[in-house]
Length: 222
Image (cartoon, rainbow, N blue to C red; front, side):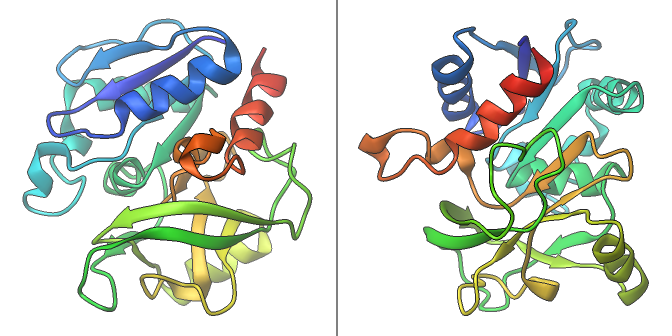
């Protein structure tokens, strides 16, 4: 499986994603600078966590207009898998690749800790290795992870089985509507999620629940 990780100014999880991908797929991902015009020929594009462009204006708002994101959008339209983690999720919503928006956490505080999640959808490129209802733990690290969308959009996400992860009962760290932690686009080839699966791929980091996400991608896209 060939992959690429997009690097924005102030990305801080790009190397984490690269390490997880190499560990699980056996191949180093290509690191692609935000100012490049085109992505290489890959099976998976990762938009990593961090603070792209210093989170000026709104989180992900400036990054969504980077040269490389134009090609991310084109590749997504062609069916290439795209994974946006934390800031990457914010970029995907700002770029119009996913519905809704990520607002300030309800507590108005930065949250950084492992949280419990429930796997809601296993019929996707990203989650086929999980079981429906499976409980997992991924770390979160964000100030603007409060997912918001209007009721019609939320109902559509529910009805089309596009809510992939929810925060476990009582563990919603940011106030997200309907405890949403991660969603798919209509074509089901783009996933955005606030928690960090790449930080849950090594026992030395405290857990391996994120491995199944990357193994699902490897199994599907190889």
